[in-house]
Image (cartoon, rainbow, N blue to C red; front, top):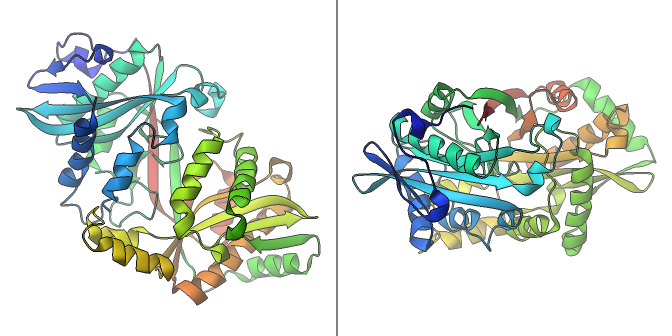
Length: 406
């Protein structure tokens, strides 16, 4: 069994379940147990990343919601322990350790599975703090009978998975993470190995797609069996349920897959409904059956970046005005899926090209968009990589999920 970072510097066993504070040399690790602790947990990220011009401060209200039971439905199927590191009384680091019971039920060969715990939301002023935090997270997971860790996940695989290893020179788009490059070295120095890379693709959408792709799109437009339609926000709950059904089917064999729950899709729907535009989100039907979807979001990060995480006193007005008539240089496609029964067919890529093209034209004409971003995409998802290559996009960011036996 691998030793923890805490063990390596002579610290006693970790027992956060009993609320004990664990000392590691001049560093103490303590559990977050109340509102004040959660506030300190959130505040640290703004302090440590303030000097990074490419870090986009999330809205504080959303950062708090992410880690608060009762507000984030992830807690309904996960056990979570937040931890703070202190040095001389000052908060100098943070981490979350968590066990997703839905992930435990997945096949081991798909990345998650029995015995697999996670940590994420790492922030640390230096390597010593990071070592202590990652060691403490591993100890907590081991105490819960976990035998393997897959990290970082902040906190669900559907939120901000992976450590950024390529693409630090530009800000992330909406719903993507941005961690300091030094964290990569901290993680790898502790014996973590790469489990999987997640890629995002950058695309200039102003010039149109290559002739071959345009012919495929035109052929699909003439096919009476194919219908590409926009999402109907008047039927938002039904459309969200339909997309969830396609998503859970389309992604169910993917590495790292954990099914969305009804509560999670309802929560996401309420959260993103204001930014969802009907003419950017597509559902593909074949012979009248919904078989594919594509979600496209204006890059909300462009408008919230200057707000430094705060809506008061006047930033809420700016955000409200933007939501009414959004303009965005970048659109992100965070999710796309085709039902499994069609995934090995030429129809699958044709539907994808058609949805991308229709959203592209609307984004240019109505939102002033010049750039698109696809992803994340698993490094071995040959179908999506082929689509990204065919429309002449390029990899602009890479995130790594690491693993280590406990």
